[in-house]
Image (cartoon, rainbow, N blue to C red; front, side, top):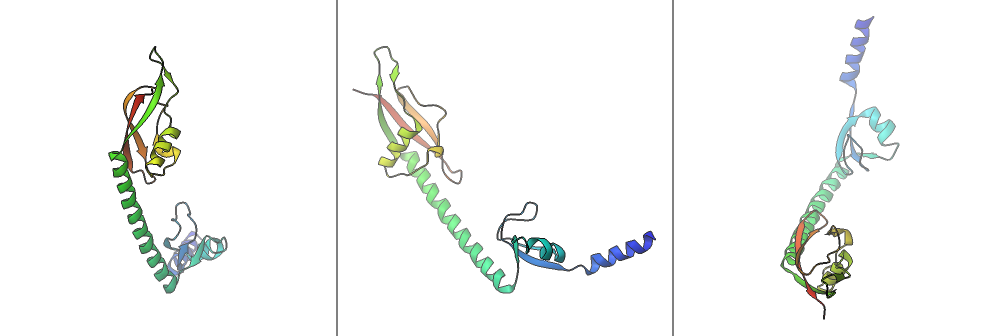
Length: 166
């Protein structure tokens, strides 16, 4: 009895067909959107294609996919180069701002991420508030180095000089 079951299972493994599909969405443990994967015939027909998670791959779609990946890689390379140039520009900047200080040495106010964004926008640099890695607002005079994280985790360091306001 067991022997015949094993024979059938081996035959099914040998004759089960495999289909190539192009994923339309990210699928855990299978692949990311745009990947071309080989999956079993039943999994492709009964689940992936019915749910709209994949389309059946043919030569034309595979060619289009390859062209799309090449264009995407070029776009990513250009974006990375632009962000590296922006990082270099930010690192060379030396911004100045003023802060009111009391006679005892305490500060009236502070320099926050919003103020740093305002100073950068005057220089023509557009960033998000979340890009500025500032643990707490700065309340002391002097030169401060502020870490900035750009979109693709490209680091930059901004020099900020805080002077006494007149």
